[in-house]
Length: 370
Ligand code: G
Ligand code: MN
Image 1 (spheres, rainbow, N blue to C red):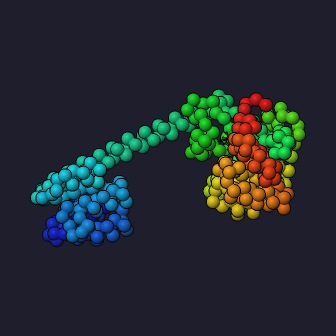
Image 2: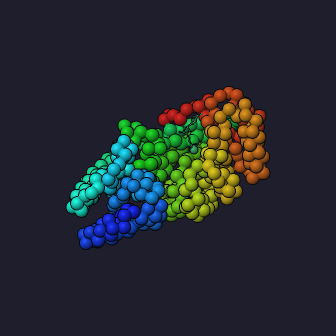
Image 3: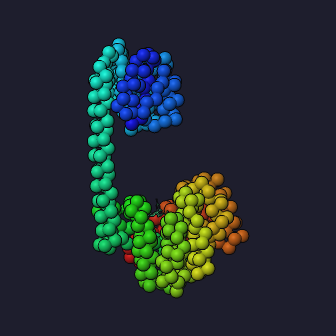
């Protein structure tokens, strides 16, 4: 056990060190507050025994910082005369775990330390069991989503800006599970339980079902989790059954997540594009590396994020930005999609700016029927 002793009285400090070492502890000493803070910055402690009156900063300040930097460390305050209201506040904020009044018998100090340490162990065990329970329940809920067929794909139309004709649909995950009841909850649970692969398989199977029912000339936009792309062989296996419809499928990859920076998605994309699938960059403008992703991904569709679409009819800068994108799209043979269109004014602005496709509640909510 690593113990920090902070005490300006040299005699008491060496008595404490000797007694602690006798009990098998490894002891670090500090003579004043600032030395204590530098020890805290460089070493982890299981417990700290800290004098109240110290050359500054005082013992309470040391314990306050210790709570922030090493919350697991047990914090014992030793003191003779003390400012009771101030110390009570610190106790109530959890900065002081135990108080030992000077002068004290060493045994009193040790029993305070032992009590505090065993209390910490009890708390940690309680927390860890509760956490395990939550994880297990979530796993069962996720399994129920799969086994009881509670996951569905809703379709939201994408229309041609000029004519309003439906060009395709975006497939959006929906869950009928009573508690894992939103796509983001399902995806978060799948991330935690390493089930993103099976989830993506389910989405691909749902897409195949919709493709059979949709009018043959319409496109289907499918969201892929950036993590899925890290395993090109799994992508290949998942999308091979969809190869006959490759020219109708657009795989949306969100720009929102930092995963694109961390994983190597290039091989998966190369395979998808060579197989005839098209790529859309989703939520464009919401992340922090839009331009580099745009340059590297060479998407066939650029789906501009709702935050840029909202009130575009009234905000000059957003119009200029979209205009720029439509020119970029022309130069790179890609299409611009504005998503989240809610008003006729937003749609009209989009048409004027030369956007190709529009999506949003104005044209249709995600629906479980065609
Ligand atoms: O990140 P992505 O673009 O895939 O997210 C699409 C989400 O946006 C879906 O959950 C869908 O329900 C929602 N959505 C679709 N159209 C609109 C809209 O017009 N307004 C708002 N606020 N949300 C929308
Ligand atoms: Mn999308």
